[in-house]
Image: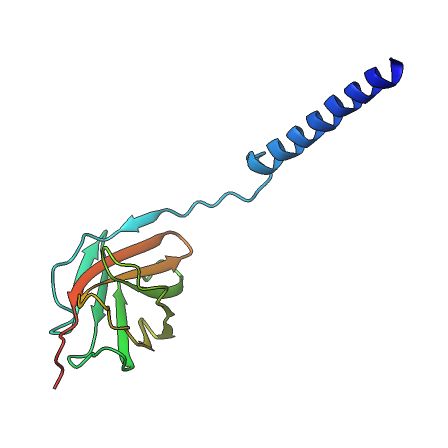
Length: 161
């Protein structure tokens, strides 16, 4: 009988310790470094970055995004983002992620390389088996003060000849 009581008490103690460990893992105890950056969204754009650079302005900061006129599926093409008005912020990185609305086309994210206040890189878009050509470019600009996000919807022309 005593062994049974000790066994039950030991089981309760082990369960309590496991619950406490789980609680500590999933609860913010205030010891982690707190970040003060906020994400500032640029308004959505309805321009076509293949025709001319799309420019958005938010809180005195300007972001321009452009694609080449001849961007085509399954072929590398350049991507460029230019920034103005970010003088007081230290820009840490600029990334572009391409998504197809309502369709999972996999991860297509590009870390752009800085050249003064312009960032550039190359990417390639896959062909959608459904025939859709609607794409979304999500641009993330990370600075030491805030994170900025701009979204551009565009269509890749099916015939680039």
